Length: 163
Image 1: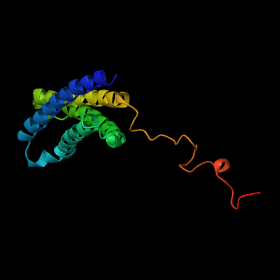
Image 2 (image 1 turned 45 degrees about the horizontal axis):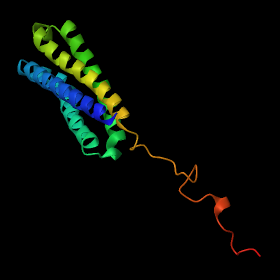
Image 3 (image 1 turned 180 degrees about the horizontal axis):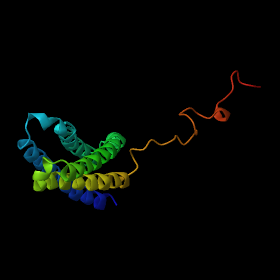
Image 4 (image 1 turned 180 degrees about the vertical axis):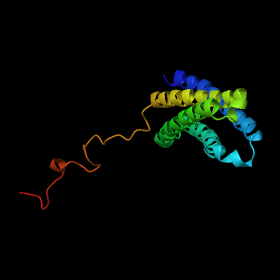
């Protein structure tokens, strides 16, 4: 299971990086035709784009270098970014259809929408792959007690010794 999940991780990571390039290109091309008055549209879009790259690169130590303690954080950040990329795809889809300025550039809007859709799909797939890789990062309960690391009370000697 480990080798097949690792291979799937590499494929999905490459697809996610290609989706990130699409998103970056879409942001850049739409930003290039925008004057200063409409730049506030791009604040969240740029933030999501660069944060996505950082999180994608942050999954590499978890999978390849074996830093399993980062696995829950990577899963949480991927889940958050999935919601953000889906929201951005919907936002740009609405802007393309409603906004008279951005409707002049449907191809540029389609590039950024495609990038966010690819990132959303890859993020969901990465969540599944990271969840399937192994369970070593999950904390385990001690075998001798259900609630703590202490020895169960019935196995400890009583003091002073009886008898």
